[in-house]
Image 1 (cartoon, rainbow, N blue to C red):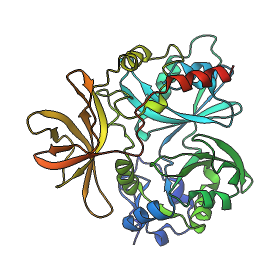
Image 2 (cartoon, rainbow, N blue to C red):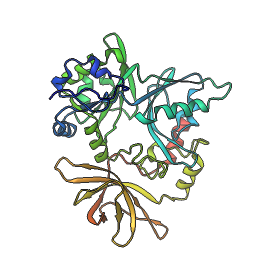
Image 3 (cartoon, rainbow, N blue to C red):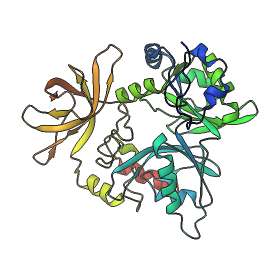
Image 4 (cartoon, one colour):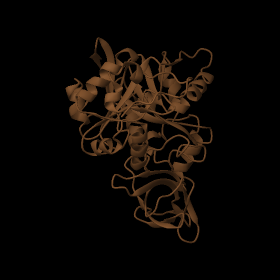
Length: 380
């Protein structure tokens, strides 16, 4: 399938179109952006995600390097994760929230020897960089650097990920916890490989210099990874229940509602939005939750979810399952008469048609305050 050239002259040409050998041989299709939307076989990529391994070029996502002696203390107060309990070589997910505890973005963080790398959504890298710089006060030893244009980011996903990273020389990471990472060599350049279950299945993320991006991509594909474009990523993230900016991550929702409890510390003390999130946890006051919806007919974003008599939620994203059945994500009211109610398996109506509420692999719904407290103590 031929490669369509970008129609937006303001968009920079990605590493892929610059350096990957013969992208047309892999069926890359570019529409409006410099990032491949598809590689011509979305169904094959979906199958590989379930049974093998896919590779996704996420180089258009933001990468912010936070350095300086005060970097961990500074980040500790800027988002929901407990950075002071982290050691070099480990990492975490964290949520940037506003002062009311509503979501701005979900970020992945890697604590390195002299810096912290933060991976943020494409549309939020400038806003988050500006926000961080706004809170650097006189005397703070903190520097924020956007390294997105000088690096590439590839994500591997699927049950074959462990074997592939082993073949790439990163076997020491296999079996470790989310966010653990190490530096390996490729073409004489350092490559950071981290454990990242970004789509609810085993996976890894790889950050490297832009200069070796093309060769590294070819090496990964040569090891059997099936290229997946952003269209495939979007479908996969909906099916996994991974919330996205402007869909599930907006100022209408908080991290507990979005199924991001594992990214929230309620024991670490003061941070932006902490008061609201602590109250929600202490009072068990979450009123709605993000769930999957197996649909009987296709739905649209914004469609009403009802119990047959009243509105109980709204659809935020839609996708199609591998067998062709329609699927959606939506926020659903989870309290009735002041008490939490069970939602999984419940039959509801979406835009008047029958649907079933189902679990989503990416979601975490319980904040383990005790475990977090133990981690904080053990780090002292």
